[in-house]
Each structure stands twice: as structure tokens, then as C-alpha cells.
Amino acid sequence: MSNHYSIYGLNITSPIWLPSANSDTFQNVDLSLSEHPLFLSDVTARNAQWQTNGYQLLSTLPNLGQALIKSPENITIYANPNLCKEHLLTFALGSGLAGSLYLNQFLPLHGASVSTGKGAILFLGASGRGKSTLALAAANAGWKVFTDDVISLHGNQGQSPIKVYPSHRRFKAQCDTAVKLGLLPDTRYTTAPGTEKHPCYIPIQMISQNPEPIKAIYLLQQPNANHNYALQQLAPHFAIDALSKHCYRPGLIKLLKKQQQLFSQSVQLAKQAPLYKLWLPSFNYCGSVAGFQHWLNEFLQQHTL
Image (cartoon, rainbow, N blue to C red; front, side):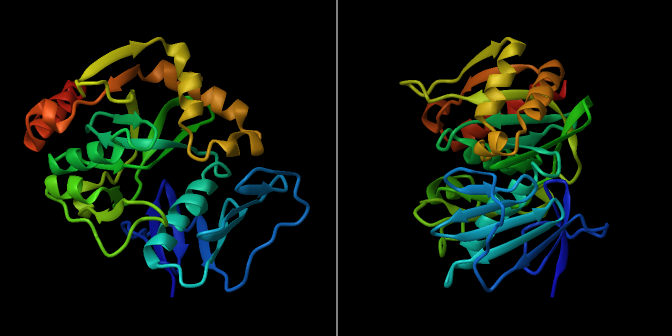
């Protein structure tokens, strides 16, 4: 039995339960499962995880399985035998659906995004920079959030504004961080083999359900020695380099020859939203978890003015 979901701005039909609101609109993407390994013929380019023949994509991860993106509207997943449901979900939401965003003319970024009601705020950064902590803290403080992992962006052929589209309610969290923020992670599973993060399903009412134009972009930096808060605005021309570094599965940019799309959307974003470097304060710097949420609440309030 298949159900309809809305994730990343795509309407999805899937036999896999997905952590999203149901979609009552037409289907854009059909997600299916295969009992047998997948193959791609006439391969023209490849890297460590992906192969393409110019119009189809095959992702192979030895500890998870394979995802074949046959077209922008059709994805098939072969899961390794005995793969637990949470690892399957990570693969479907990542290599499957997020990978297909490139073929659907979206730009997927690796980061967290929070709704202010007057525009979306992007927080981009490498693993361990605090994206999930920031998103969970914002949700717990009453702000609606889009995602803590894959940010789905789309604009109409260079026309402003570029918008963030709703994601799903499954976040990745360190157990102690989630508990400190008043949220309960599912400690029975990790989100992927070899990771220490656990799934944390936040209430659907905490998730933004409508796309919003981007209001500001923050690049999360490695914490300084004292984990103090600091902010530095960057010139617009830094946006192209910054966004290319924070694309989701950046190897697909070259593989699918999306450099021109990335350049055009980066130029558009630079005109649309200011770009900053951000050093997040630690819980200790803020005095407590409550202090961090108070700081974050005031920080986000500035974007509602």
C-alpha cells in the first residue's frame, strides 16, 4: 500500500512510511522498493558513490544499499538485507529524495532552516557545527522549522525570490542534547550505521508547512576557544563559493553538469539575502540550555522586524 507525502517541495507516492504531512495533491515522485540489486547501463560519469548516464542516477552505499533515480519522477531503492527501518529512512530521504532534487531543478543545501514568518533563515555548516541543536532549540522555543539537514531551494528561472520548501519532522540529535531541549530521541536506533545521532521526531505543528523566501544566510563556523558568540558579515561575492561548499552531495554538481545552475542561483541568492559567518555560543557561554534558547529567540526576533 502506498501513501502520499509532501517533502522538499515534492509530492511523493511511497510504500515506505515517511515522516511528513500527507499530501492531497498530485504526485510528482513515485518511490518504490526493489528486491534485487540495481544497475545502470551506458554510464558516462561516476564518482565514489554515484553513477550517471546523463539522465539517470545510481547511488551505491555498501552499508545501506542502492538508490536508482530513473527520472525526476521515479526512484527505486534496493535496501541491504536486514537494514533497520531508520537506516532505510535515512537512505530514502537522503540519496533517494534529496538526490533527486537536482534533477527536479531544486538546489539542495546541507544545513538547518528556521521560519520567521517573514522569511526563512539558513544555517549552513559541516557536521558537528550545531545545525541540529540550533533547529531543535528553535522548535522548542516556539519557532517553526524547515529542516536540520537538507534544505530544499527553488526559484523560477532566475526570478526572485528563491524559496525554502518544507521538509519533514525527523531530525538527527545527540541524545543528551535532545533531552536537555525537552525532546525525546528514539534511542532504539541510530540514524545511520556508524553514527551516534538518533532520530528525534518533533511534533508536526513545529514544522513550517509553507515555502518562504530566504531572508538571511549564516555560515556556521568552528567554535572558538571560549565558544563565544560572534558574527561577521561577508561581501555578496562570497556567496558562490560558500553555497558550492554547502551543497548536499556536492559531487553531483560536476557529475550532472549543474555548475551553471549553481552559479545562477548563487548570484540570485547574493542579491536576495545577506551572508554572514556565525560562531554559535555554547550552552555554558549562555549559562544554561534555557540561556541558549533565550539567546536564539532574541537572535531570530531580529529577523521579524
